[in-house]
Image (cartoon, rainbow, N blue to C red; front, top):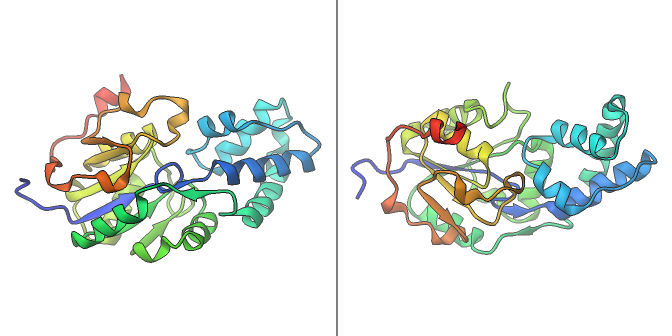
Amino acid sequence: MNPRPLQAAILDLDGTLVDTVGDFDAALNAMLAELGLPGVDRSFIARTVGQGSAHLIRSTLAQVGADPALAEPAWRHYQRHYLAVNGCFSSVYPGVVEGLARLQAAGLRLACVTNKPGDFARPLLAAKGLDRCFDHVFGGDAFARQKPDPLPLLQACAALGSAPAQTLVVGDSRNDALAAAAAGCPLVLMRYGYNHGQPVQALPAEQHLDRLDALVLDTLVLGRPGPESALIN
């Protein structure tokens, strides 16, 4: 058993709580069509999401051979289309509702920290009935830097009033792993997420799970140094 209990948990959104590839597919391809550009497929989207909307737009334009100067109008079109479809083509992963309830029952305060813009993240969580689970929701535009920088996790810990070493991070990607390691947070990774098309099992974590409600809290090791070197090498 851990000598120090967990105080809080920070969870990612896309690929961790909700499968949002369908929403990205609809919004990105509507954006491209409006610009007179060819579309992209879901496999490209799944390996590209997770590093914020600006990166997604730039990568999508590069994928279809478009002029990078289109990034600003592309963002405007994408924002309008995404807000119109947000949550319509996405689904909560099995075990998420039960897993969040289990974390709350353990007395943990919860925050959602995502690279998705806050104006996209908050309505999505509300549409899926998950917003009531979280004390705080921080989008990719909430802080000066996004994951994999540890700043969002450290700021979320401050908002939650929890020590990083006693704050569980749950994610699905290398971005989450790098941020958690640098912040000194214990980490659990979901196998079903996106992780830029790479197997998440290759990343060090306390647990690798297929369902959030399979999380075993009392086996987590708290307070040990994060494995930054294992992630970087």
